[in-house]
Structure formats: C-alpha cells, structure tokens
Length: 275
Image (cartoon, rainbow, N blue to C red; front, side, top):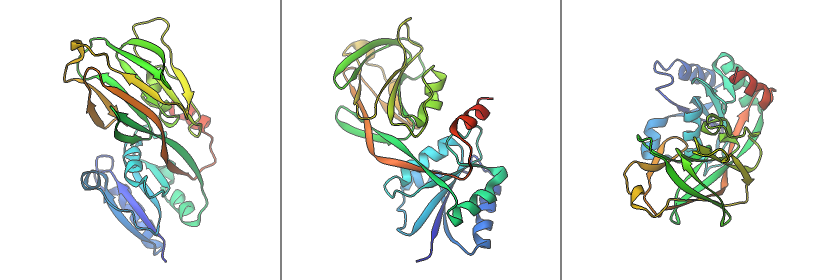
C-alpha cells in the first residue's frame, strides 16, 4: 500500500499559499501521495485519517499544531510541524530548511517525541483533550477570582487573582511561562499548576505527578454568577463557568507524537526562542 501524507495548512499563516506550494511540489517531485486539509474547514466538520497515512505535515505556528493534534489524536499518526508562525516551540522545522525536513521525513530519518495530553472535564462531563493547557480566568474584567485547588481531593491552596493554569510539560513554555511557572522538559510526565497574578506573596507554581488529578472549584457565591467567567482549552475553546462548578484535569490516554528532524536539544531551542 502506498504511503500517504496529510498536509494541514493554516491560510492565516500562509495567506499566499507559498509554503503549501513548496510542500506539494516536494511530494509531487517524489511521486508521493498526499491530501491537503485547511485547518479552519476541518475544525468545523472534522475528518477521518486514512489508515495508510504515514504522517501529518502541519504548516503554521504552535496554535495550528495544537489544533491539528486534536484532529489527528485518535489516529496516532505523528506530526511534523513546519513553523510559519512567530515562536514555534512545538514545530520540528523552520521554513528555511523545509525541503530538507521533508526529505528526512520521507526516508524515515527522524525521531519522535511523545507528548502527554490532558483530559479536562466540568462537573463530570468531558470538555476536551488538550496538549498545552487549561486556563480558568475571567474574560474582560479585572476583578479577583478566588479558586480552590485540590490534588487527589486534598486542598493545596485557595488563591485569589486572575485565575489558574494547569499545564502539561509541552505547555510549560506557553502561558505558564508568562505567569512565572516552571519550564519543564517537554517529554516529562507531570502536571503544572500555576496561579495567574496571585493576590498573595506565597502562592507559587506547583508540580504534580502525571498520575494525579487536579481539581479546580469555583465558589458557590453570587459573585461568580457572571457570564465572563470561563475556561480556555489550548487557547481556543472557551467553556463558560458558573458558581459551584468543578473542573477536573487528569492525564489522557491519548498522546501527541511530534516529529523532530534536527539534532538540537530542547534547551538549545529554548535559548534560541527566548533570545
């Protein structure tokens, strides 16, 4: 059976389709089969990954890659991210070495990093599986949110501030980093809980085991009966919350497989990205 490659593009990051054309030209030159998907279209209708798909090539930044990981997670195929965005912590290649990265992909000259994901539920109903983070915050207002955080049912802190981030190691270089949370090696297995602008001198980021369950409880008070309190999942889906809601975050059985075609280490990339 012929190998099939999937190309997932983001027109916002490649408005003239120049990078998409380079990928298609490469595959055409090698007489390799491929299918092309627009991330915006596919998120709206969803798609099935054919059984003979070798890998997905994603053109965009970290946001596009996270959205693509959600679309292909059930298939278990690996993802090669080509960074056409601004930062690109998750992507495995830059546009400057696009053809070389594709060459290595087609001959199997690459390594795969397995990244843990998180299942997030609200009041017992699953909301989504995420690669990066779940963020509970208030949308548009600066009033303090007071949240109760538990690990395996044991309360570890009640904190007032702008909200809470629960992050995977992959997401540690995202919002978690901006909020002062720890940076973790992305292939590690742990959950990171980081308060956002806590109104406290002692509230700090906490690292839990990947096998722990993190719960976030919204107090049952009229103060929290506002339409702007909610949770964002991997920076896209916004889930409205209300007083008394209970969010549970735990390790998912799904993983994301990221293809890396260079020999650089995570810390070398971190130094480069953070200047």
